[in-house]
Amino acid sequence: MAISMPYRREDAVDYAEAWALRRNPKYYDYENLGGDCTNFVSQCLYAGSGVMNYTPTFGWYYIDANRKSPSWTGVVYLYNFLTENISRGVYGRPTSKENAMPGDVIQLGNQNRWYHSLLLLSREGNELYVAAHDNDALYRPLSSYRYDRVRFIHILGYYTD
Image (cartoon, rainbow, N blue to C red; front, side, top):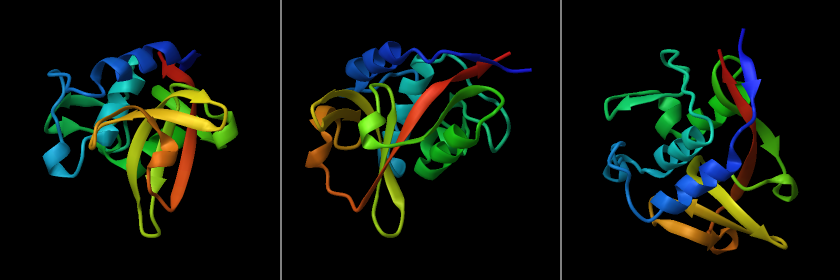
């Protein structure tokens, strides 16, 4: 049975600060293969949990550039994993902008699709500041992005054995 552990938000934010403007050589850079944003956010989430879910197809893991789950690099797949996970690795739930906390995930979309993942670093009043890959950003105001839709995923913790 899985045991729920507290997500280490500060570790996720520290990782984002360290790698937002460069690439960790332990991970492949997918920027020229559709984008690196969700790969980067997954790295941050892993820094805050230290646990992957190696379930084929529906898990959340990275072994190398060619052996990774769809949720490690895909915007919609990450959302589905985070909000449906009940077995191993990070998990969360949709939340509001007002309740989003540093270390949480933000995803942007247009009328047709969800296309970008960011990590929330801090907030000042109503402004949220994020880190991201693809148009690399560190403490960029969320209000400076153009998008039609936004969703916030509050990370509740992670499951381990």
